[in-house]
Image (cartoon, rainbow, N blue to C red; front, side, top):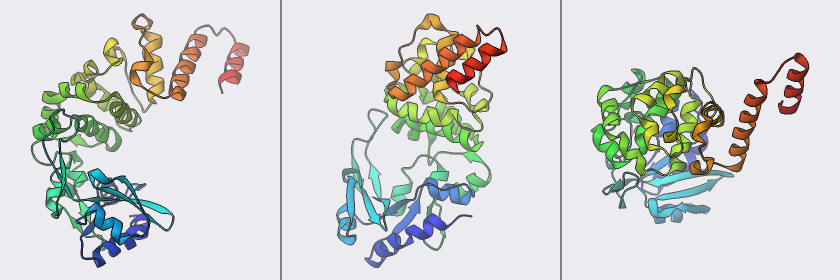
Length: 302
């Protein structure tokens, strides 16, 4: 298991603790450490308030102070330190009406999405696992923290996140969790297209996408997403990881009568250019008649 990034961040936790507060590693980094997967970012959770964190460290950036997150700059590295927090009601299925800070780690982790993401770990690599997340990791299953229906009603993006985790990790989705996804999928219509695109891009690149894409169809996910709902997504088959741009190009090339407007997806200009490039390649592939034409195509597009 790779401990390097945790050891680099340990002085942050130690300094918080020396000032009388709790501090733990939390979330995806702990999950990936327990799975012996590559770790890219370290998230830290603490009982200290944002003001207290700013008083403890010399160099901080209040990147999300109103939500409890302070960026601590230490040895030219940035670490997100977030205060334990609880949340009010989610009336729009996207974000809580109120966030308030607490001093209890349990209160913080009980609001998280899946058990595997609700495991805290200290600098001695001892875990605090209130919801059986480590066992779920070992059993390779995706389970919500608490009642699945409640978690998805609060934030419908968690439905897509759960499917994305299945695609990336190859885990099974626990039955109650999957049934709740089915019951609450219509709530994804409330989500911003930007948040959906981020998750869908990762999902399509996952190693288990061939098994997850049919679930998207079964759950009628695309019926609630701008642009996609204009296409017959059941006509698209995915057998291995692909980019979002490639899938969009296939959709547009194979179903030109739908004439979808990429602007609805609010993707970057670079992504739009890639989609158009793929469409152009598909058109030219149909006209190739000899090796010289193929060589010219490769020369033009790489």
